[in-house]
Length: 215
Ligand SMILES: [Zn+2]
Ligand SMILES: [Zn+2]
Image (cartoon, rainbow, N blue to C red; front, side, top):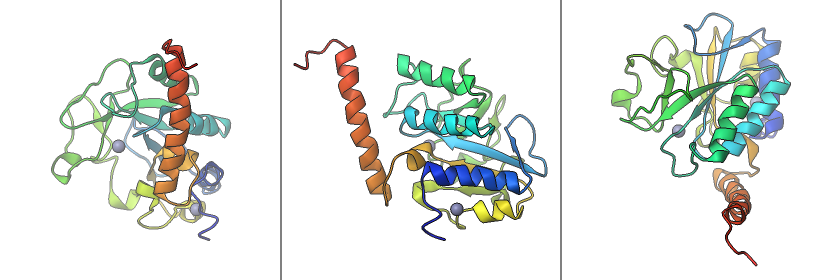
């Protein structure tokens, strides 16, 4: 089923439907995971617009997710008007907003729920509990049997849609990166090229808004 398990929004929708068919409910990091929970986690590394598109699809299907946004990204600025609009939109759609932190900096402020996912963490601090905030990779929110991730378009144990449909997981934290699903391509390289093409078009609009003469 390789062709069916593409990294496209259409298949992401099928993942959500599979979770429903398996009898799961969509949960957040508010409490410890319970049997039957699927916690949808999105680390937003590169593009806020991709996060918003995925969030709209989830809202359409009645799913709630937690979006982890960066304050120290080199790719987007959460403090810009665009950044503020993205946070507001995610909230409006009923999703949670957590902090995608760059170690050792934690910039938890009122924009975020008290939940943190480290960006590109090293093993030595990745699972350390935090004071005053949930670390999504610490117990009880993380355990290897209850975790799947799409990192770099690669599922280490295969796409989980069939396992969800069969209700194989007691509960699951499902980490997906919106950019991978929103932008087309057959490889990470192609997907990133598509994202950069879209970003160039947005940069031209940003230049015009910044009153740069593009004539
Ligand atoms: Zn699949
Ligand atoms: Zn990250």
